[in-house]
Image 1 (cartoon, one colour):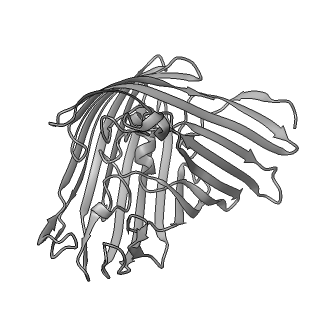
Image 2: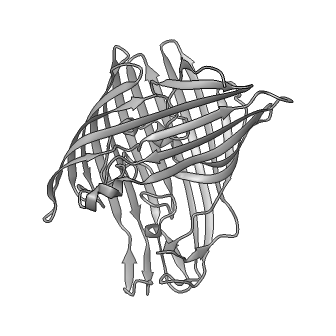
Image 3: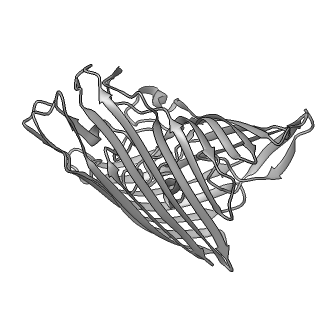
Length: 393
């Protein structure tokens, strides 16, 4: 290997798609190029939960992002083809406040293991990385580099950002996907994804004999002093109960969803709007046991929708101030004789959150963040003042 060299690159966070200031380390190995990028963050959170048994909590916790450590290699071009391979693992720095000896923070999540082959046909991508559905929503959310919602006041691991408060988590899925070449700012992507099946504990209660399908279309353009980006994404999956475990049903569940969004920047002003709608979509996960109900022979899917709107202003190209509001809703599931032994089961869930944030780039590798988040819904009524930051390399 030749001598290490420094170069200014974008940090590879969430499927190497989120641009952030960084100083990556890269070097050559013969005709191959190798790079190592990453980020670590931590926040002090002052939380107030308006529940009888909750109260206040001071908690040191990651934001929506865990730490990321990413190794990437790029092949030499041969016969019109270029290959890349990437592995990203994501350790947690924090744990639940009630975890003995703080060991709950020692989790490592293998978020990405994939390779791409690029040519005149576009890009073939194989392996595990960020999904297509809800990708635009999470990558354009300002709380991606903040905290956003919390699942509780004392828990460990990452926060939720706007997951369940404006969009369903894109998740990191194993898939085989194709992306078209860029066509004057327009591109399409389609993939076959490993299906997500309902389960009770370690027992799979559903089966899928076809892949999960996801698609995405993106368009971006620029004008004097600004830019516009729009996206549309879809998801489709079928699964059938296998008469196993506590959730023993032979019913069928069909998950469908569409997500659309817009990001406009004009000078220092920025605006983002995102919306999704579907059935049997979880508030947090794409396919969630809370998003459908079944009898022994029949399943009924909950209707789901959500949105968020976000406005930002950036001072001197370094300090972004933003205000956003979003909500997620699930409703309209009603069955007689549902499997939880009640005569009627209704899913009616609504989560709402307002966020005010300041995101300041101190330099190319250091970002400091202050947020105020006020949330209500399935995780309780929680307000949080969060102060922290990121280092990128």
